[in-house]
Length: 284
Length: 288
Image (cartoon, rainbow over all chains, first blue to last red; front, side):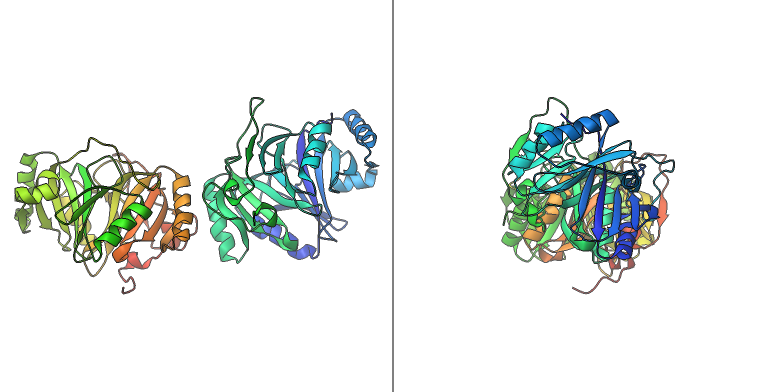
């Protein structure tokens, strides 16, 4: 069993690095913390960084998950190799560019590129953005899957990851007390489907709703409230078609939590009546 | 000093009684509690009724306030007459139509028709609507006044109303712990400018926002959050262009509260950034 203890970063290719970084700073409300070798590092919390953008293929996405020790990293490499996956050990240079002490990389059954990292960098400076979006944490991602049942079995079979609720076959999964850290959404190709930042309160969701609307940012879903996690949300479109989400009030679950099944339809995604404009969420 | 102890009802003329009652029950989420002599009584809380609709002039509005005793009612009649206002003492039949034990009616200096009622009816049955809008209480109104400074003076000198906050010259006033029971809006005519129902929580505000859009109801403002009272709100248009409001989380104040002055600006009206219709505060709302 590979034990994940943190969700750390997304590495995203983008067709126009300058525009994307500008959007991340002034629209999402992220702080730029570094710029080296073509990589721009940004964050919405106190950790070193949450998103690394680089000029490149906008379909090139990697998710960084944290493991506690070098020993566990080696064990993880063996478990994945035994299960038939190709594992690549990151060079020192690659580790430096991920701002971690060591990492391995593999592709999940759908083909999603995953970094397993040990001792990712912390930061001595607190998060200080240029737009007050109220962001408190990089909290979860939507991960695309070509077979949600197979991929749920992969994550729950080899990792300490369990489904806390399901909408159709879309599993909302976590490795800690937060209702979900990885949500699997069925489609026909790999990639990160959305990137979530928690914000302080509903006020931040609604302020951003008007802020984004006035700036002609395409709202994809919300404002709304998920019945699964209880979180209030707003999904919107960023550069390269990436979906970003603000949410507030996600449920914490404990060992007694029993996963619930919801049908795959619009009403299962929002208890307020918002309708998604996100292909992976839509029932039509 | 006339001591108002409760906020009871609106009596509203409407051009099409049945359409209006249908909107009140199916859209606003009110319960019809009685129909007699052309009056339809509806409510959003456990009291006898909050809104009485009748077929008639849609500009014919009356607000019903509560006094505690008949002695206070007599005192109020004298006080209003001493102020130079005409007072009508309601007949038993008229009181029965207002579902109270006794009342007087007068017009405030702007011409707003006000009932002062004694012992308005309670109800033995709890509020049970046909649409779940989450309504808790009929809570406040916007009142059209010719001159908000004069109106504020009248209601605070003759009555136990006090100002909780100002936005421009418009006072938000109350007689109890709720941040406001009146919001005074400058206008060239008297009347009730909006009618507020409190709902349980933000979920109800947002559900209704989508519900209204699905039912092609025109949203007047919101969803938003009032900077003054802290309440989350949604304003929408009903029949006869009456504005109705849902809100939740209105601020409670006590005697240590100090009224604050806000400028007429979007941010004074909404902390979230919704675009309010500020013309209502400037007394130059578009002609209907």
